[in-house]
Each structure stands twice: as C-alpha cells, then as structure tokens.
Length: 342
Image (cartoon, rainbow, N blue to C red; front, side, top):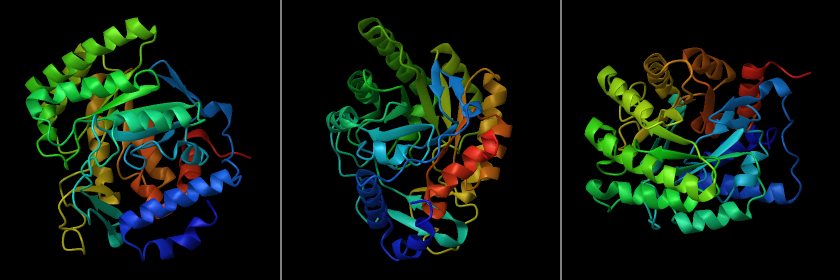
C-alpha cells in the first residue's frame, strides 16, 4: 500500500472526499485479508512508556479516521505504535448532511463538518471485540448532538462504562467544532463538573475491573493562554493522564480565498501545524515535563513530527497527512523520531 498510494491518489482525489475515504479504508481492509504484509517492526529504541502503557513506537493514528473501529487490524498493519478510534457517542447518529468533507489541495488541508457520525457505542464495542490487534488502543468518546450540555456528563460516563474493559486509554473529546456547543465544555466550570463526573466513574470502574484505564482529554487549538492554564489545573486536579493537542481549528489561516476554504467546519492539515504546535508548547510549560502531551494537527512529514516533539509532545498522531502522503508518512515519522533503520 505504501508503494501503491502515490499512484492511486490522483484517482482517489477525483472522487468526493468522503467517498474516497470509505473506498480507501475498504480497500486497505481487503488487502489485509488477502495477506498484505505489515509494516516493518521498528527498533526497540522506538518504544515509549507513558500512562502506564508501552507504545511500540511514538506515532499513532488520530481519532476520526476509523469512527466505528471497523478497520483496526488493517490500520495497525501500517506500522502505527497506537491506534485511536471514534469519536463514538452513546446512540448512533448520522452526523451532518453531506457534503461535509472537503479537500483544499493547494494548502494540503481538509475542512470537515462530519458531526460525530457513528454507529453508536454498542456497535463499536462489538467491532473492537472482533479485532485481533493487541497493541495500544485508544477509544475516543463524545456526546450525542441532541444531548443538552447540562447532561453531557451522562453521555461521557455511559460511553466510559461501555468501552472501559476494552480500551488501553479513553480520550474525552470536548473540542470538536462540529457539534453545537461542545467546545463550551472546555470552559472552567463546565470542565470541572465534567471531569469530576468522569474521574469519579473511572474510580468506580477501576475497583470493579481491577484495572485503572488512563484518561486523556482532547482540546481545541483555538484557546488563549488563560484558558490553557485553567485546563492544565483541572487536568492535574482530576488526575487525568494525558492531553491530546489539538483538534481542528475554526480559523482559516492559510486557506482564505482558496476553493472550499470558506466551508463551515474544522480545518486540519498543514495550515494547522503552527497553531497546534503553539498549544503543545504552552501545555508543556503549564503541565510540566512529566505530563504526557500527544501532539496532533498538521503533521505532514517526519520533520513536522520532530518539531512537535521538540515543542513538548511525548507522542504524535496522524490523520490529514495520511490523506496527502499515504502510509509512507507513518514510516517516515517513525524513522524521524527513532532513527533510521538499516
């Protein structure tokens, strides 16, 4: 697939972005079933130990690519050190009307307003149980679009209970711009209440299952220093294990005036890189060196991955870069962060 993708990309880019997305994942799954060999295993020096987990390498798949955990084994074969699936909600929901995913090729960017389209947490759990992957699996959870904000914690707690036995870690998504009002959960009072409910439920589940599953919180890139400081304080208070920085941005730096640049939704890809790296730097300063930061947003090359780690990230995740670079990007980032293999 690594060799084939540069040849296939021009054909895929002639299709609607969401259709191409579905076709690519389906093809990857079929190739895996036919015996597609997995990517080369990196040298042992690639291993990282964070959150009480051992990562085979520091390059992961970001949430959003495999919302329903249908393609875990196929994606793991690309050489990722960890996989994050979701975002999943308690009940199935269709998401926003199509079209809702747009390429901005000149800027190596995407705009999406998917809206947490997924088949619901019960279906995701079924899919995870069928997967053979035994590496680090993150499950990203959210709330249904029609759940009032004052009851959001109920949705997150419901999902946490469902996925807890299967997840290596659980990511709490409070930062998608495509569910109305969701980012208000990043405000201090709302986040205090939400994390209090989630952390309390995690304690009960840990007692029940005899296992403490790490929690990560995924935040937006459109935060100021005061907001980041307040979030950092709450992450420490509720013993959250990591922060994922960042989700997509509502800003349009680098794409203004380009085709699809003014579409509503979250912007990802190369134009997000500087903004996301800045948030990582601020978080690393606010949280301290020992607190894991997972850097995501605009990582399009091995050099980008190195820069994100230099900014303070312990691990990195890819999404939009895969659309433009294909599976070769995974190997390139692993090599950049771990040293080239012979």
